[in-house]
Amino acid sequence: MLDPAELLYAYSKGYFPMAVPEDNNEIFWFKPDMRGIIPLETFHISKNLRRLFNKGYFELRINGDFEGTMRGCAEREDTWISQDIIDSYTKLYDMGYAFSFETWREGKLVGGLYGVSMGKAFFGESMFHKETDASKIALVFLVQFLKENKYRLLDTQYINVHLLQFGAVEVANDEYEEMLARALE
Image 1 (spheres, rainbow, N blue to C red):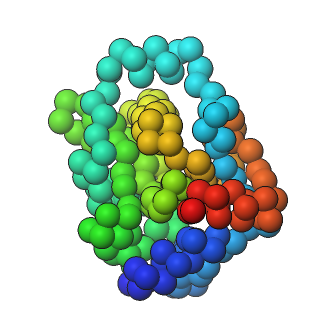
Image 2 (cartoon, rainbow, N blue to C red; image 1 turned 135 degrees about the horizontal axis):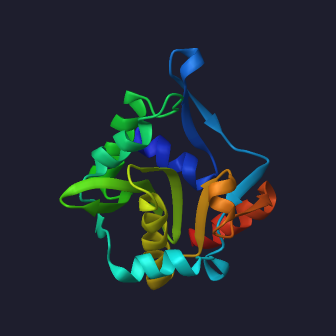
């Protein structure tokens, strides 16, 4: 398990850990040259997704099942979320630094995401869904929470096609470090 103080310090400097399955799930630290973020002020949500969110089809919870959310994220063929990663982030959750934003339906966890919160920065780690749009609704829920609480940075580490639809962009590491410093003031 990673030391919680080391983990928080690494985040404050722009690093994040990932277990590498090809190396016996050894944990390595990453700091990409180009960093994925979703600017909160330009977050984009489609009309259909907004309608679904407003309809209340999913029950929304924060930390209803943090470890279950992590395990949901890890349930894929190729994952960087090892047992050590789960143990480390569960410890951060116990300390009040890690959070899960979840979608539930009929009493079952059907989607969500988790990440680390420090200052006014949220470091998104991973998402999952067992029902169509469940992870997207969790992301909308997260952004709503971040805006309401005046967060300044939503770090996605990398960007992918899924995140591009919400307005995710890449910024150079030096720009990211400036954004991070302002969010941690």
